[in-house]
Image 1 (cartoon, rainbow, N blue to C red):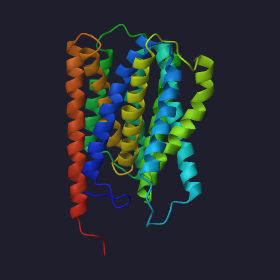
Image 2: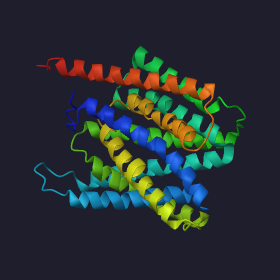
Image 3: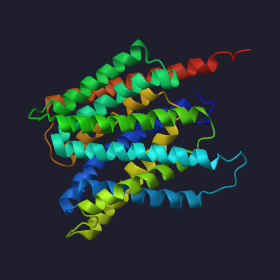
Length: 316
């Protein structure tokens, strides 16, 4: 089940996506702990997350630098990919935070994460020639239903049009990032680590002015605890998760990527109950089971499809 463009097996790519989605799900709980320990705002937190993740990736990349036997990727292509991916990431994160401020966490989350798979499924056919199929359509529908139940099941959500539009903009940024990563991955020679470094550099530059306006340096009575939280945020849900995401999104179908990434709110809900003292409700349990079932079904279908494609004889 290997991908000819990058050499990463599709099965391993699915595992990378699952780990990345689970790691992203821990970021919300960490952010909540950061907000409790300091007066840091969401945009400044996003900036420090990207900037510190960039520093960590550069350090790891320097330690693992080895002579290359294959032809190096052209600088112009690398720069273009980094700029486009970084802009997509900046739009995704900043528009989402703005949507949360405008219309609330529940509505912003369900619109952003719900519209993402739909936009990707619509774009994958003309851009990549990928067809979702009946099973994939059912899995996406089940995942979106689970997301809606999970996030909105508690009631009390307020819908505001500006916030919904910002959430749709966030979903568009995420969708463009996913589709382009898959498209570039098909061309071969894609450096996932280089993509992560470039994307974080561009995103940090885009977020810096907004973070300065919001307040870049937080006030806290527990600096040691805050540094530990930042260290985890930079290492696990940022450097590790995005590195795995960019590597796997180049070999796994875009619609599958978008659904597996819905593991993020599932993990966030579990951590909110286990660590932050939130109450387990019937909506949380039902939505979680629906989403996990959809993710598992689509991942198995992707693995079976890759196995079939590998076993098919090459055209003469």
